[in-house]
Image 1 (tube, helix red, strand yellow):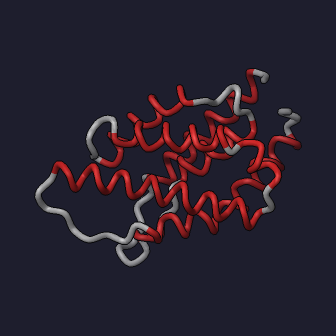
Image 2: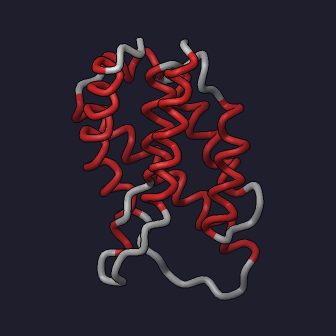
Amino acid sequence: MKLHSIVYVMIMLFVAFVLEHLPLPAMVDWFQPAWVMLVVTAAVLAAPSVFGVWLAIPLGLMLDVEHHTLLGTHILSMSLHIFILQILYRRMMMFNFLQQTGVIFLLVGVQQLLVYWSVALVSEQVTPVSLWTPALTSALVWPWVYALGHAARVRLNLR
């Protein structure tokens, strides 16, 4: 993989962190997609040998700081996410968009559940949250993110 391909992914990760931290009105705050997970998924599917589980440590730490969770919570969930993606890599490439959307829905839902459980284990005040709306929104946004990333890779000749 070329250096400018890695720089392109790093720019996309920066944009994903900005979108993840974007303040939304309280009414639609539940529906914010997991932007970083979507970009990580696209990066792992584009180059699974370059973007591996090592990517979970810095990105997970940054997400822990951004979301004010325990250090290591997002590292665990993101490393599990990347590990499952690397196992399912060949199948994901054969899936159509609807099947890929279903896999993304399940992966982001598992990530949301792991983060919720880790917060519930440590804190005494646990408020009921909707775990499936960010997963559903991420699944609905996934075809757009994948198509945009693929078009940008072809346009910039990043293969």
